[in-house]
Image (cartoon, rainbow, N blue to C red; front, side):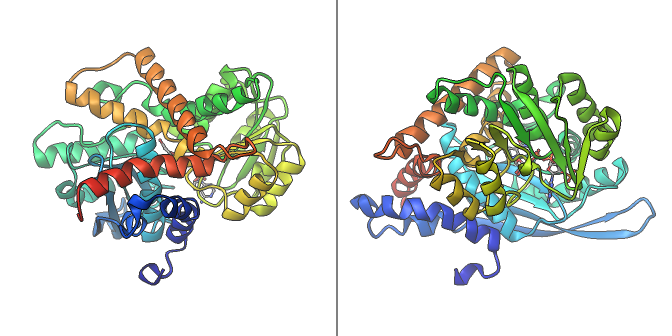
Length: 434
Ligand code: NDP
């Protein structure tokens, strides 16, 4: 704690994992005197750099760039870049820490990293975003590479930004390699990568529901966010016959009691991905409610999918969800539920699927994109989707294996933490004090 003063989000993420890992480490003599958890919690390397760029008015702007190279015990560093005004070292260290367990759970050979900048893409022109990305990569290029560190997208970094970053890397290095994932399908990207996190989340929820011998059909779903993860989670839910009632952005949420259809979702996709508009416009278009400044957790549902950002669902929200009959929460976002909210879910024996398991589909397909880049070959949509489904099923199995309690309750949080930890610990111990 002394070493990470003020890093609230990072300490929150480590404490959450430590709670389940410390007893496990104590029970297993092979971890004695290895300081394994302390070693995992310390990044291998953190790079912080200046990102100067010129805005459209010809003025100089300066942002801070980061890359946290967290763990390379099972493969090259892998994890997204986030561009958001709230980005700081604590946020990126928490994300990089979570990424260790998530990447391990996918079963693919990927280490963990995370990076980004406090650059706020909101209200910036395409030209400004391009200039920023080029400046960002002009420093980052020397620290990344297809066998070293392979960044991807995250909040504020989508197809457009990955394109500008990739173009600049290629220009500086003079090589076309798989240094980034989330590339366009015409230039090295994988099929299903845009959909992967959202689809994977729903494949995971399907596995949970199978335990109750149920399916998604006619289930009421409440979703937060309206970005990449939220859009494709909603799409898969609708496809499987569920009723999606809400989506949101940082201004508030829309509540469509009739359910969001594929046609209405296409409006949201266009609104968010092309026009870069606000979710409120959906309410105007389809004449439904827009609730300003609030989160959608007050709407009664069977399943809640927090898909926006960290700590967006607190204890009070959790109590309301449970009171209204919600029995499954699956995190598309990273650490969206506070520790107090998770405690409410556990007390009420509600299925709670943590992000490191439930949203691992995105990085899993990024791993598949890396494989395809190495092969210089592209797989079909069907093939990648099938592999994604298989990976999510396997992650679910691992969670059940390590998370099933004596009374039969499945503690997914414990299962994901231990399941992710085992492989990393083995690899780190095998590689000596590095
Ligand atoms: P996007 O940038 O595409 O969308 C983010 C969405 O969340 C937007 O609707 C945004 O609203 C909202 N949001 C972001 N920050 C806040 C905030 N502080 N308060 C309220 N709303 C906010 O990001 P993604 O969909 O890619 O990522 C969403 C979450 O999923 C993140 O936690 C990310 O780490 C996680 N994730 C993403 C993966 C991926 O493959 N993309 C993989 C695994 C996890 P607004 O437009 O108003 O900012």
